[in-house]
Length: 352
Image (cartoon, rainbow, N blue to C red; front, side):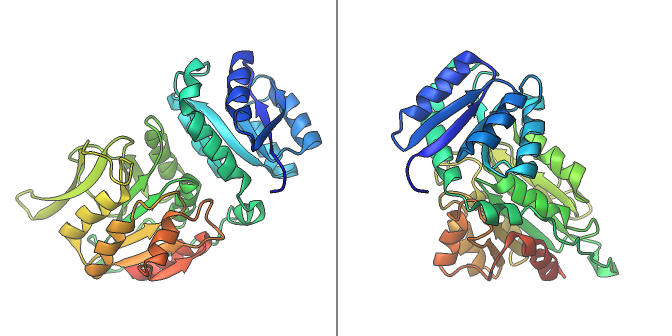
């Protein structure tokens, strides 16, 4: 993108407008071209000014943020970053926004009016820069939902055959939702999902997976028994590990949570979950590394391959950020590198 990155701020609070504008303007790469205080004004300015990136508040007067986003993506697709409060309602709306085409989100630390948003200055600048570099055409093409595949239920599929560890960061919620929407309900596997996101959002994310797929999902809790055809989302702030226990009728798998130090600067860590699954269930562990910054999942992928597991990496074109998948590809660990639209099919075929 030549020249300065042109940003439109959509926020109904004058105070929040100023804070966001000051943060963005502090970086010489950005230019705040205008501000909008309600949904209708936002649409008019998006269509007229054609900004490179829009920061869009979820809660707006006249027309709410989700409706604004939907109309933008229908008429004039634009790179959008949502701003949301740490509330159950705000989290649910944010997950929906990612489905509709928002590239990423920023969680306001103190509710709708967050004077301490300055604490997130580096995150805000980093996400706007990242959004400006997204190949919008490729990103939008990956939103198209492929045909849902079916898996025939056979007698030998009455127990867990595979543990599938899915890890993602930036761009991950939408990618994971698309994959899970294609997984059949009778699949003989369990899914452990590690998505880097702030506290307060993983519960809504798990609920969204349940609503929109055939796989029942939940935010993982200490002691959850891992069941076939179910998904468990690591709660923000806790590592999720797999343990084995005896219930009197046989060995079972359960989830344990801990607050051990971050790994690769994150907690939960994909590698922590993957390593624990491998120790208990190898070689019947599959890893799926999706879009995201950094290298989380790389060490887990190495251990997975050493123990006979199967690893899928998302390709560069369909990734919002090709960081974590690139790390495993560059290390020669991926059994296949696939566009998002083909990953669910590969998961199903491997389990079969």
